[in-house]
Length: 74
Image (tube, rainbow, N blue to C red; front, side):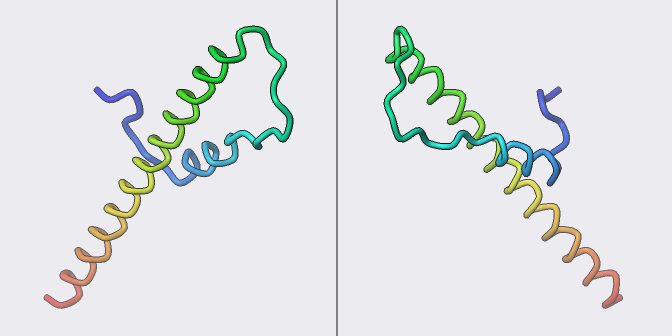
């Protein structure tokens, strides 16, 4: 079973709201390069999930409208 079986608009919006605001000053954390790699990977995963959800919702919406149109035309 998938880690995230149901894609919802609420999850998409929550993930979009969790996007970090870009910092204008460099971070002074130890091992900044490693932390930047981790942060980049986390953000990339978040972006992939958002794109996945958007595609799933768009497909569901399309199928619903198509099925509704077919039901009406019968």
